[in-house]
Length: 101
Image (tube, rainbow, N blue to C red; front, side, top):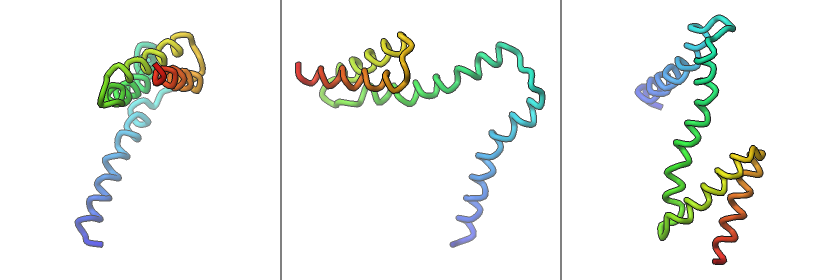
């Protein structure tokens, strides 16, 4: 293994370690402002939405409607406070039924 590859691996390790370590150093107290807590609780949902949305539009190259119907079914199931597994299954079942139309 050449030296450049080793330095790249070490650099990537440092770059991924810093964002994990900074919150522990900067927020050493257990009491965060409620507004910051609200923002941090919504971050995973925002990231998940950003990752899933392009797939909704490109799931079927023939029609965007297929992805939109699946996303709408998942959104309605999530709006009804169903379990995550049930949200996914409802979207799958709706799209399975849509293929027969």
